[in-house]
Image 1: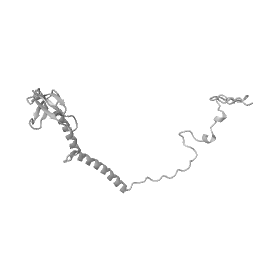
Image 2 (image 1 turned 60 degrees about the vertical axis):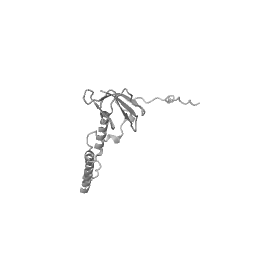
Image 3 (image 1 turned 120 degrees about the horizontal axis):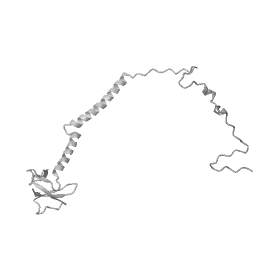
Image 4 (image 1 turned 120 degrees about the vertical axis):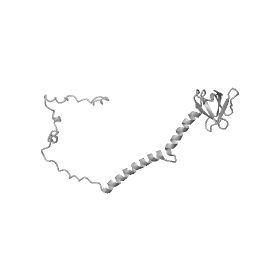
Length: 185
């Protein structure tokens, strides 16, 4: 009769009567822990071996760059720095505008929009009231203040009633049409 197979995750059992070898005496290593003789012939770390080793392969002399390669490298570096410098100069000093002028004009338009789009309660001075009126925000205590914005009516068909002294219709191609209503200061 044979023994049943071992259970999963259980170490295999030794046959009856088998005993592991006794441990070696204190201070000795077991025979299987002895170093191989090939590795004992090496000197300790940091010391030079006493036996000569195989000769090293001769080193090739350092390869010098040809003058043409040096000139090509210098030309490439100068071309990169010159291109970057030209772009920066062109960006900032183009008399026909350039990107710097476009950025500055966009910033100026944004500032102008802020001074020409009053909120309710802002005092304004109206430029060209009979033609195309442009409200410019001014200090309410200044002598330039002509009107104070009282209301903003949204929609293209809205108009200021008799309660207001002046009105400006604003029509935008992209956005909401509205009417600004003003009272005299």
